[in-house]
Length: 399
Image 1: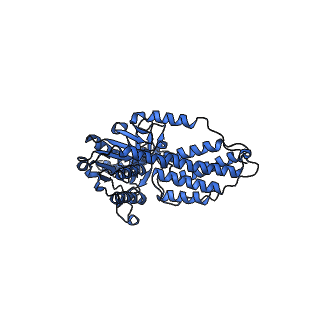
Image 2: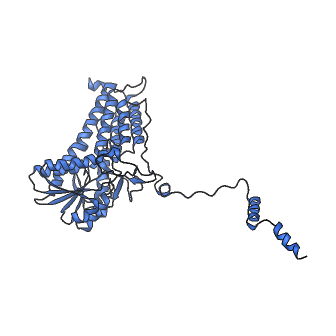
Image 3: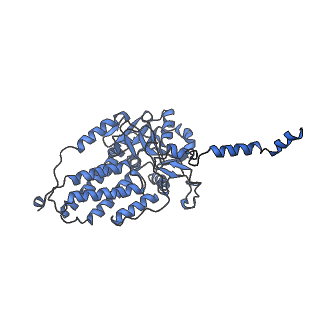
């Protein structure tokens, strides 16, 4: 009798085997697997466009100049808010020059669709800048005012004149005025600083100050961001070469040593890709950190931006709208092609956002304004844009 319990224990399966068998019986066949936890990029940055390491799809229906520009956008060969806008307008001008309106279709209506199609393709190549959106909005307004009976040749001429006038009145002339206003804030013996390549407006300030025989020196702060394109790194080196050619003493420091450099800086001039109605400024990644450091050292922070870069929206952080670019090793080296990418999970934000409390003033072609007045300038620009304008010439008037 004593041997029976031992035999029963030996005949029973192990405890783990029993639990597995019971679990298999209870588990239904249609049961789903537990969802995997999303990564940080998917959770917080999944809405941002990521730079694709593959060529753009060619669009045979578009003009070759627009297709070529889209490929250059995707490759990072065209950078900077002003440069991207000017190149886009030049491509549009070339495309409209060879444009042929279909029969029995109004020129204005079909040309508007053509402009939208070209802009959409460039946006798919790389998200458009605020300056590009403002330019396209202006051109579509010009096209919408075409007389219904306008000829195709007259429409092309009006469009080309509108492109030339926009570049001259919104980019070239404002840059000169910003240079005059900014140079007036540089006194003899001052030490001013800028970040990265500065931008066209900041270069105009330094050119104007140097031509006025003002003795000053410049500290160029380099974030050496591996996400910057080779074009952007070339621009930084070009800025240093430009200052050297102008006879301006230049110091080149890294962003990590900015506190040491700001100890002797009198003013900080920064470029902006966009300025929003709440006074925040969007610029290359690292600009906000430099502006905050300057604010802690009681250094005035002056952003230089043309008025066509002002936008009516409100931005509170850099995650609402930005671009994701892959992180590269050795991005600051002279040979960008040899830079080896780290795993694709490492991404970098292309832009950051400087809050208005760290901005002393914004230099525009209308003068110096506080960041709190950005909404007023946006409202005035929108009111001027919707003001009645003379219609485009009709065939009879052009004759």
